[in-house]
Image 1 (cartoon, rainbow, N blue to C red):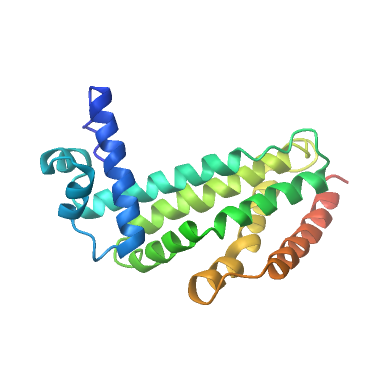
Image 2 (cartoon, rainbow, N blue to C red; image 1 turned 60 degrees about the vertical axis):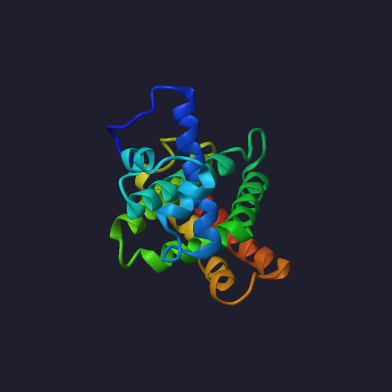
Length: 208
């Protein structure tokens, strides 16, 4: 989205939100290549001039959609509360919530689109990684830090554990869902159990 263009009125801001909502639905339904700006304009009721001023072109619009999609995913993930829960119970709750969100039909479909365009548009891949993958790692980092004090372990060790956790939880499951079929509940539970066992051991080492 253009940093120079900020609609001055609530109606203008609503129009931009409409562009993003309509664009997201169209990209999910048709894929990146089959969507045109005319499709977005026709369904959103906006004008070409407003769309270009706000986003630039189709690639920039898609980048804005990716950014918005990642932000909404992170916001949902952050709604999972683990306050007052012990380490194991809190981890299971957060891990289960994360995997459930990541394997939703909408998320898997969007993942396919991003993976299919990131090679052509490195900026799309960078957005997905920094505002998607890294944002999830930060959520797990915050969880770990809520149980591990600064004097117990270095920030780097906890950050590395958080990165490994988020990747281990969904890498195989998400790719299976994207190219084969959605993993079964048994497969999901087995993955969470395996990662939880590894995290528990790492947690014990970091807090010795």
